[in-house]
Image (cartoon, rainbow, N blue to C red; front, side):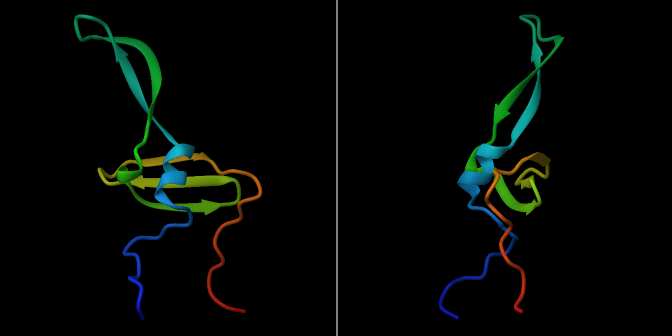
Length: 84
């Protein structure tokens, strides 16, 4: 086998998977206390450890252990598993 076998499952390239999910963070005021507002933070491709597509849902596991869920693009079926 010439090419390396990936250590973790990747149904989509890390760049594409990172664009499909967001991390939620809490906005903080000038004094550092939470304001109660939430905002989305983009995930960088380097943070994607693995990803799985099931139906129209993508699940991404980040290098720091977070499990993020997003909506997979239509028309992009999950990679075939096994033979016929």
